[in-house]
Image (cartoon, rainbow, N blue to C red; front, side, top):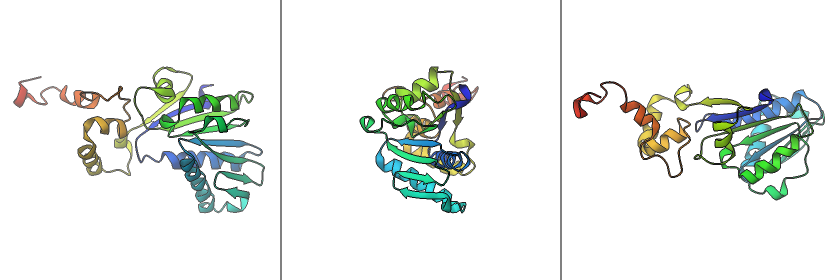
Length: 219
C-alpha cells in the first residue's frame, strides 16, 4: 500500500507541475489501456496540466503516439488516457475507474473532491495516487495525511535544496513575504490557522547558542 500512495510537500517553483505531468506521460506511454486522471484546484489549472503533458510529448518526439487531444483529454495509440478534472466541482467528476490519480496543488483541492476521487481506484489494487503541493495551513486532506497517515510515503523538498533557486533569490523572497509566509511557501511548514506569531524557523534560528548574545545577553 505504502509504495502506491505518495504525498509530496514541495516548495513554490519546485517543479511540481512538470513532475506530475511527467509521471502521467510516462505511465500512459509505457502501459496500455491505463487511465490517469489529474485533478487540480480549478478547470483552468487542469487545462494547463494537460498542456504540460502535451508539451512533454512534443519535446520527446512522442506526439505521434496520440490518437486524439483536447484541452482536458489525451488519448494514446495503446488506448491509455490522461484526463484533466476540475477539482472545484466534485459533483461532476464521478464515473471513472482509473489506474492512477495525480492531485496537483493538493492543498487547494477541496476535501469533498478528494473523497469523490479516491473510490475511483477502489477496484484496482495496483492503482496509485500521488498528491503534490505546498502547505496551506493545518487543515484538510493534505495536512492530515502528512501529519498522521503513515500508509502514505512522504517526500519533502525545501527551496534551499533546489539548485535552480539561488540563496540571493531566497533572501529576496524572505524580505518580500516576511518570515512567516516564507516558511510556508519555501520551507514547506504547515502553519496553524492564521499563521504563527513567531514562525518555527525563526525560533530555531534564535535558539542557536550565542546567536544574539550581544543584544539580549547569552542565550
